[in-house]
Image (tube, rainbow over all chains, first blue to last red; front, top):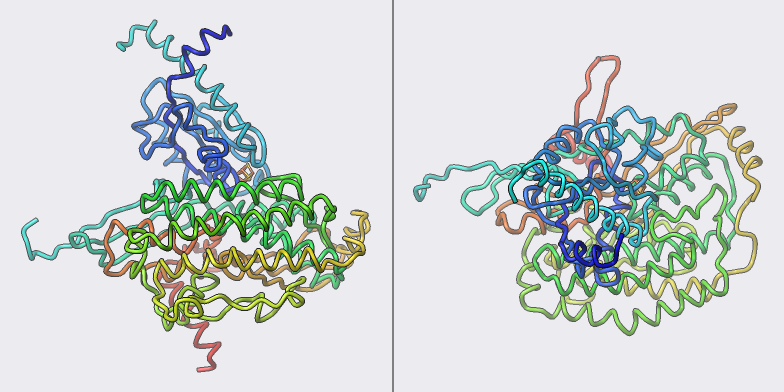
Length: 153
Length: 412
Ligand code: SF4
């Protein structure tokens, strides 16, 4: 992609809603580390918001326990279009160490469509930032598709 | 609502909410702004970890145990390993014991700073949160230098540890101690000296000393109520026997105990300072020697297959005592059964007590004040196959059971 194009898109700030669907916390603290001064993803205008209604991006950690399945689906539906789903951590992507458990419905892509996977158990904050960068581009693409389909701005 | 009608409303919070990164459902019955009653429903992220372990051998379970909780991951591994070593009668070399204590203390430092930061964030003191998190990156760097990972280090193994403390890593630890001695005081001052922070935490979520005993509070939650309980002091494990830990209680510093959020905050922050001392002692006193009972995994597995019996491991995690019990059966590779009792399990019982007559605005702070680790706790699903029923222990059951245990312990 051209640099000019990247510069055009990147200043669009992503607002992220974080849903923990049964993770071990490892990924969650790395997400917290990502928003704090060392990694400081807020300098790109990205931040965690308190309601899915305000979010562009749904960030999911954890292998999705049976109890959380319905909640996750509801949260996904509440995020307005265009939206991007990022899964952070191996256990959301594949089940990881929890793969044979009786109380899981996951991994996440069994329940909702996923756009970006960030691997690692837990991934480093740098990897999470990379995932966010991919999400920005995807979101822009989805927005353009929606516009083409006739959605109003 | 007309004045004086005293009708209570029920506010559901969760399971996914902003106050805490982990899902837990709480119902608060409120009269105006006052909380009359609180009901907590855990279990939303129950993953059946203990059950999964029955299809894995002890070495594989190490990595499962680590992922009970990503914050106190090493605590869980050490408790599990001690249980396995107890069952199989395996001796751990002294140097390995020192390295285990070293990582445990580093983990305590990172966990307590994280908690202190999040507590500040909860009542809206974002600068302190960011300052705390910035300071915390130092210990994360050291953990990475020592173990190769920031979270879930995977350095424990049956009979020892997998990574030695190299001179370079030791130097990094020393540097970190100096760094915190210089910088940590700032964080302490901006929070404990700040009148608003004090006002938000003083007399909020009080747990009296008596109730802390009655409801089996553990770790910093109990110490914040003035109880001198600390397993590193009362039943030392690994290298703690050589280090001489004394339980840290607020009355030794301020002269009185409130048992409120402020005291719990104070205890945790001062424990970071205490951990620095311990770390220094560990790095200075670590003896030379092997770091594992047997470095070859097939031999370890063979020894574990031949072992028979039940083993216990109880250690003081950042949040309180973490207990693991393991049964190994001769001739079987897998763990026969494994039971974990994480500290939040015990501490969450006192939540409803702390909530009583508080304002709703303080609810997230109170929830946070015991440093809950929901992912540790999610194992309360009890099924009774014979009776064909499955139930989730409610708070009332738990409290009753907890009291029963106290009565038993007191011999009444
Ligand atoms: S990917 Fe690993 S570190 Fe992240 S939540 Fe899952 S088990 Fe924990």
